[in-house]
Length: 168
Image 1 (cartoon, rainbow, N blue to C red):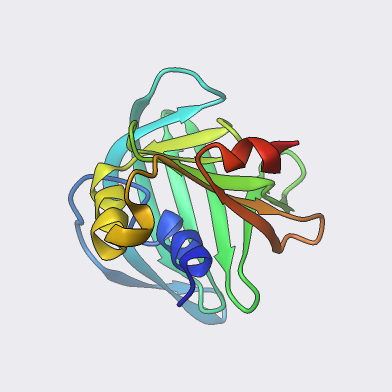
Image 2 (spheres, rainbow, N blue to C red):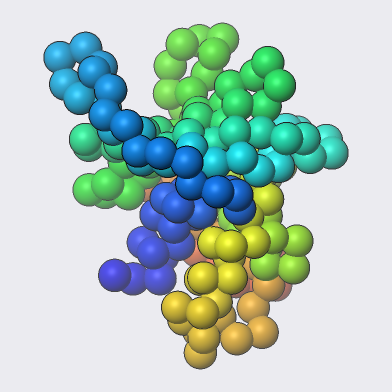
């Protein structure tokens, strides 16, 4: 698996939070089945505001995985699809999915963020595992980002200062 694919999947799968895995449950969802993979308690922030307690629920929907971030009275849902890898954010206003512009991890602050600081999740356990799984590649790295094109597919990935080029 490429680093980009590993990071995209890992930024969301198993890695959006730092707290305890509670339970795996099978739920009925319409005609198919949804599987709650885990529920985690951690810290999240919206629009760059200070972090607050939040609950992240990962749900396998077959062709995609949903990550519901419950922050106070708000719910932010990120969807990850494979073949090709894409990430979307649910808009409560328009009741539709919108492609993410970028997803990134900053190791020094143990955070994973989506669309800049629209949604950030504190996640030291996962970020430490990325470094442990790929020590040579991640040595002395602090920032990893993937950028999505207008079609929702990954069109660039970067590390550290190279991310300033991708943002332009």
